[in-house]
Length: 581
Image (cartoon, rainbow, N blue to C red; front, top):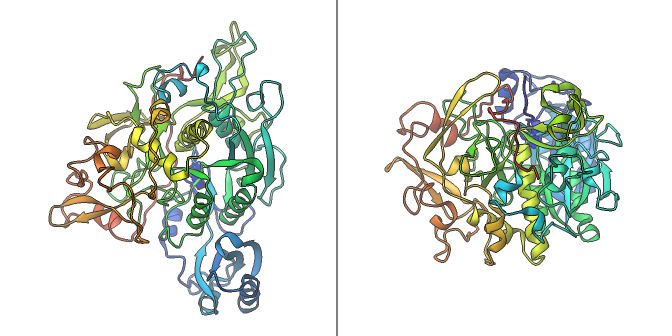
């Protein structure tokens, strides 16, 4: 049984794990290592010799000063391409065409980049006592009230937990971007995500437990970008991001959650999806993304390092890894999950994830008609678990899921809570506060066990596994700093002389970051336990090794790509979940 979904595009529930959309002619790629490995083939190269007359989907980007309509017309005429969707947010468009025409399109005036379009999937794989560090959340005045949170996922179904205290829905706007036009959440991932962000924790009086979200006062903007199979087209996600920005002022959208992802195949500078989330960030929207569920992937000998998915590889978003709470109300025994993807990012070597949050066996709202309910019955919650003298039967209201898909909405809720307290905060300031105040009291190493296979995984809790630490919302609420520099995540560099990995205080755009400022030393953000000194990371483990060692260095510091072929199951955990009231 697989309990995780990569939606972060497989939304590799993170992984956007991306499988091609069901309506496309591309083969489904999630079925085997060989299929996923083909993603490593640079998609800018013409492949007519090996794939003759095969129609694939590509995103063509034009230079900003080039007329978009003229560019689209030229591509259609030159390559006999079929236009799927215009993408003005990135000065581009999505087409279906023969890959043998790529060279001709690339030569057209105004063309800046061509990317093979990816299929995004979810990254799925009670939390409030842990992330609020023991505070009674029911007594806190900050609930995210007035803050709009855009959820780009499989949609939202009507659920009591998504209503306000008067029974009115808090879903203020809905729009469907998939070719499959559906009114409800036919997969079930998006409803669960919304419940984690802002479920009200409905309790009619006979409930022994209620499943309250992080920010139960928020209202939702429901953007359906994943279909009934949990898959979505990259251009649909980009279009939804564009629409979210357009609606920002109307619905006070301050937070965007993307629990989906795709494999990194090009620099974030050219990645269409990364460019789109950067536009949202610059539009004053906090973008929260799941890291991915490839932390167990050792196919390249890297023990899961270098497996962060896109758009989590963008330095301009908050990328979240998953912790497991072990079913207790205390944080002291919580540990990182073995499946949570680790940094640095491929190609750009961005330091990721930014922080971690609970993501293992999280109970939240269930879409009654969602496909996952019937496909993964072992994830069902028995009604007698939360209803006094309740019937011994599966609930049609609540469901548990695991993955970085579940961890991202915890942080999205945290961002909404901060913005409720201080609406003047910028995305950079929200990111800074969450990272700086994150708990950094990790042991050097931890061990996790796969619940399905009983396989044990040993994890080194360094900066590429846990980021800046474990989310602590109470500490973030108590922080009053407002730095003005960019909080873009820094990059890492391998030093062959010292055989260690060092932080570089710029992005590939040459932007100076606040992390290395003398007023904000490295140790304040990542802590001495995650750093070996003020600027040098743990770099002498078996993963990095000697520069002559086979394996890790060629993948992490080179340009090769290898991806695993199955999503991870949950860690061993009890069902006495945190978040119970």
